[in-house]
Length: 79
Image (tube, rainbow, N blue to C red):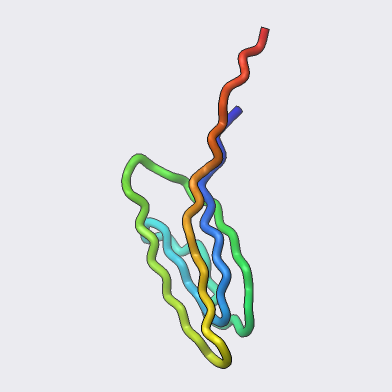
């Protein structure tokens, strides 16, 4: 089994851009209303840099973003 890549889940009301290690991974600058996104990315041994741009247009401001590490994968021996 190969390990899964980490994931960057995001929920935003209204516009959001997210960069991981200076690479644009979420680009929804013209969005209106609540939207959900999920982006896989390649992890390295270096620290992960996350930069978020957020813009509230109308109504209530809401932003949730994280970096979820990959699930632990264990090798199962085959006979």
